[in-house]
Image 1: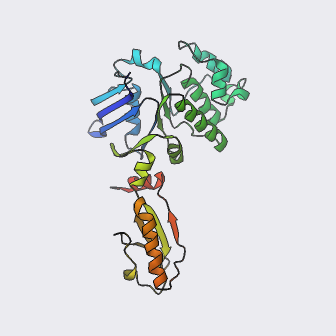
Image 2: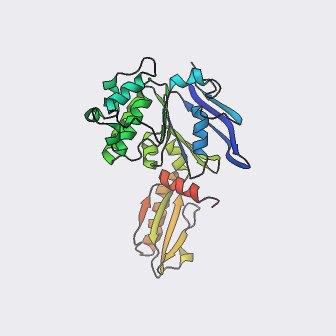
Length: 307
């Protein structure tokens, strides 16, 4: 059996003269969670629609479980679970009745009680859909997406509207499903969610993938930061170069702050060099701090590029 669950090669999608997706490529292995992230208007939603089989690829190749998800939808769709950004329920059906209704559409569905437990909705089994909170409706969406025991699960902003406790529980459930072998393609605006869950990820910007790899690989290429307020009697020109990196200077209310962005392997020797430079001059470095790069740093840097 092929190890690749999803393969996208040079996908292109246009709306008139506007190219929303401009040659996107990525792969998702079986049994991994892949996060597809993107700035506003990056083409992420259009890409996801093509992979889910909701639209045909105008150019390039999309394969899910070895098949074209649009042209071979009848063969592919029963093997997928899709949790859209917004679901629709019959308002007067209870949570349990909604699950039972959905179970009637699939072969070999999960038992109702198992789905209630997976989504953390056991106590809401008798509550009508219209009375559920926004977060509870999202958990019901998750239960429905898991009803048919999918091989590949698409999660589009799955924890939006949930309180922190429910968000944490949902992430734990998703992680357990992946450990059991489920393949997941996740989109989320909660970057800490991607950091916690993703085996690998891709960041889209203006229709292209601009960064991809494991979280460590993507973040590691961004660099860690060393910051301090420049002592008032030290000229900026006298600040040291650390591991070949000069200080970036920001001035706010007359106070200068120096920032060095260093690759992870250069962080410790760079900090040592800075402290030795300060010690030789009997200088204190007010507000000295070291910040490890995060996925948010990479995302904000990407969002600011070419703006």
